[in-house]
Amino acid sequence: MPHNPDDMGSAREWIRRARSNLVRAKQPKSEEVFWEDLCFDAQQAVEKALKALIIDRRIPFRLVHDIAELLTLLERDGVRVPGEVRAAVDLTPYAVESRYPGPAEPVTEEEFRQAVATAETVVAWAASQIRMT
Image 1: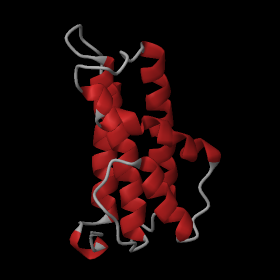
Image 2: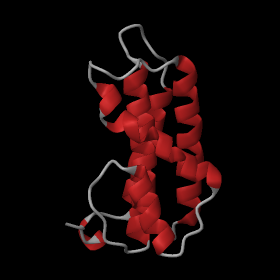
Image 3: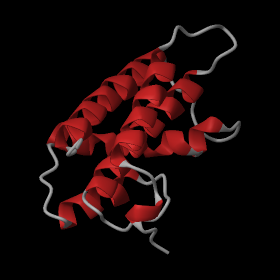
């Protein structure tokens, strides 16, 4: 069931949360922290940034972790999504599968660095698209 954007807070609040997740993802990693957990924060930054833009454009949306679904909503509303933003679909597995022990392969430092770079791109792009009035 899609949520009404009017009930979801402001786009500005969502961008602030996205930036918070991005900062957490970029904090120095200790031995006890898994790359997967930092990638989750990168994925959350992307997810929240896209939802900020969806809210700004007043598009009803489901609370999902699926970045492809969120990008599709924006494209259906006429937003031109750059390729480097579309690449964020690769971060979707960090929302659930990679956060738990089991069949998922461990995340490498290089994969983490790519996830953060993608998140930085998406957060900056989404923020630039939002009418912050």
